[in-house]
Image (cartoon, rainbow, N blue to C red):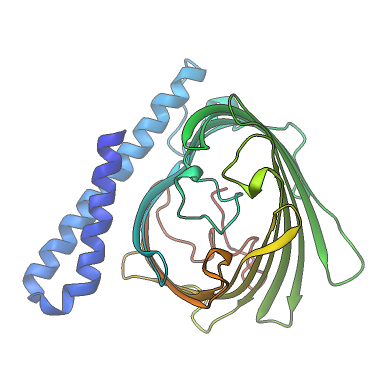
Length: 340
């Protein structure tokens, strides 16, 4: 697994080089390099599906059909420049490995968990491998899931369990609220809680707005929230662009409060996110310019710029440009698919 992970990141690095420097390469050499990249992508996508089938085989003696195996792996490279912290390179993977022999009630989760807060999205605390159990009576409005695995917390890898409940509410008004409660237990860091309230609203035919409030509490993790409560507030506005199948844009305001022991502004972030497909159906890039005001630097305005390259491997490698970008199905594209 580690060897293929490293090779996948090399492939993305090669794609990034082709993307940046291809105008300077002779056409014939560029075409040969692109063909090699496509061949490697096909080989590694086949390996992802084969490995998922082997994992699925632990749960049954029967072999699931190729149509039932729908594992997709996302590999990414992120480079962030921060006026205070300098430049940081952050590679990673994320996947939900399909286990059709369990009637898809079980999934193996790899990589960062995007249910976590966004302020530390480049932090290695997002590293995770777990087995997820889905509730029998899940609906589009209600989900109950349980996780058992290993996650990085407080500078070490720890076994943990998580129970997560999410419910959306239908109303007669324009807002659609959703509440999510997650309870964690780690062998060393002990108990954690994360509560989230989302309020979705469509604004006309081209805008979608979501304010999100996140409350977090840590029992023993001294590196988070000063042994107290965290309160994070997000405001995200998504705009439909003319080429909505190949590009997406969002505007975000994020405010982070910490208990010191009274609530104080830890950081505030104002940013834009722009995502664009490449000529490869499985590869896209994203840029994120922004400014933030960290308390450790006296809330001075600090410029930040992030570039991200991401590729899809495995089943159906055609990218949905809004996947893991918008929090829900794009209201202006009812055919949007999700791998979650």
